[in-house]
Length: 131
Image (cartoon, rainbow, N blue to C red; front, side, top):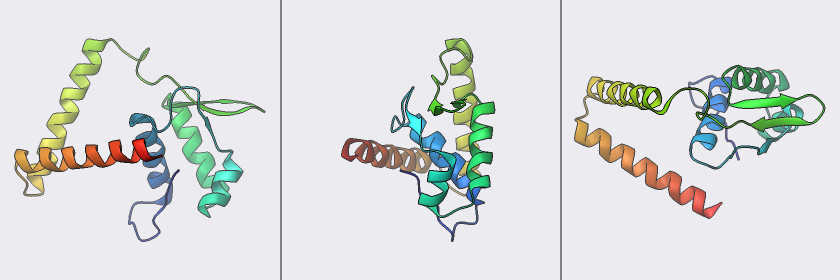
């Protein structure tokens, strides 16, 4: 379910963190889904178990997952209790502004950025319907 690219300059823990958060955000992982054990995911990805444990701990601090000792690590209901709808919308607008600002800094127009965003959304939607 998660992939690590050794040629990616992003550190392995950051790649795994991003992959899990993306899986939750796109619905590949839903509330209550159990994540692989630290040891199993480390073996599957061929990475150090301490790296997986570090990512799981950060995800737990962020409220993305919850670890039940002796039972496993489970996806939490992200966003519903964290803040009011208006606050979450305000934060989403700020995220959109940041997205457009960073796209412009890379030399892309807002139209280009939306096109890339739409293409990526369609890819994620296709991945979710296939798996």
